[in-house]
Image (tube, rainbow, N blue to C red; front, side, top):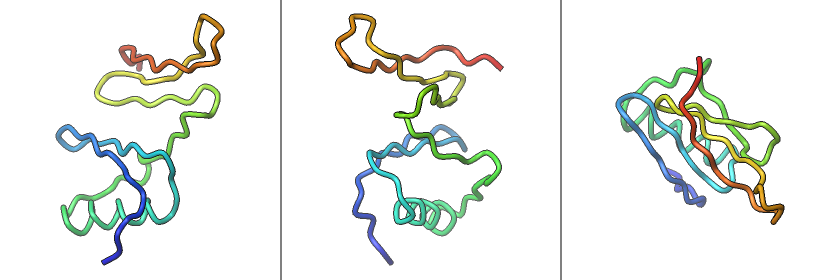
Length: 89
């Protein structure tokens, strides 16, 4: 068994889940897959699974009926603000 050296947070509801991490790589991806498929005996839907880099322009995440997206600060301070809006299908 290999330990993951990156700290991550898992958020789940029923059979939907999101993994939040500062850094993503094959080590983290492999560790998550082994835990979900091996230990929990869940099947990962590879067609729906994706990695979202929040630093990319226009990147968003739909989870539990909400769309999470970062926007530039309206005050011009160079900050990015996380906004959650109801998802539109």
